[in-house]
Length: 423
Image (cartoon, rainbow, N blue to C red; front, side):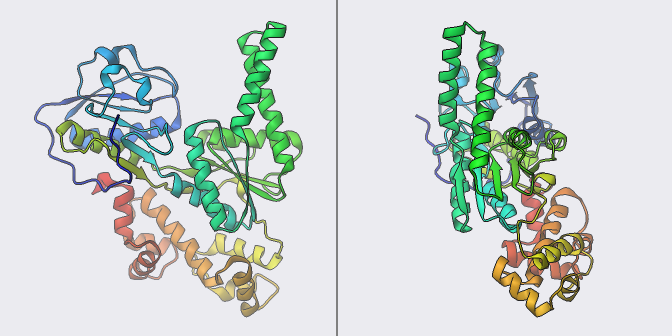
């Protein structure tokens, strides 16, 4: 039995490079955007350290462990497989293996994972900010999806929203029964049985979508599930995003952009996950790690696209005001300018904001500017003054004061946390 930590810990500074290169295997899919993003972070580590040699194959997410791994003489492994999928030689608490795919929600193996709590908080906040009071979650039948479902229910409840969850496990059981019956009675091929199961899933999704209160904001467990929801909405004549707004998770930009409409998604910090995985494995191979570490990496933010780009708020003045803020917040916008775009006074509009959103016009402007500052800190190399000006602040000191009050850390600390390879 592997001993595991119950809470994430801060990682100490990277130890000095080894005298001789370490041999490390990367059992990570190269076929999906998630795996390739993690590999970019690993590449950053390799360029900085240059004391590892890498063994890697082209592979898909659910491909079995490569045959060569059982007899491979290397020192450590970073993998997206579960422990049971590894050769016996690479199982157990003494082997330096870092896992990147959460298999058991309640008791993850030592490794580096996405912060599902923070991911779901962002997804729920995004939909609530757009005025949705009824939310739903569409999982798939996996343990990782279950962890996201639990986080969704917590954050939706805290926001005071109506909550609904698609019964993915029940749907899977019904599909298996239908496929078995089809195969036994009609002697259908495995491909035909799978096609029947997919069609059954779409029918169940369609019935579920039609049963939900409208408008509704839905968080999909993964981008692929989000794209499926958009397709079923089209088939059922449900308007997206007016009737059903959809948010995916993973931000696979190619998949999200070719969806109709384009899919909003929560973006992981994949480069940091890969970099932290290398740091953790280096500790374990050096004997410095505890062997039970679990590190969670917060997401970068929400990439907003057409599937959720709406305002589910009946009050036309608030809708106009929020559109004004989202398009002009970083252009020296003040509350009086926002009120001028509506049919009411500044004071009356502030009262409406307090009633419907729980904050003032000024608060909303600052929230929007801080969100842009966070994006610039992570995605660009701009100096602090440039970040401040481009996100609508008068000077760097103002940004620093407001940023620390809102996030408990300075902008520089935030950038270093998101991009540890630059520290």
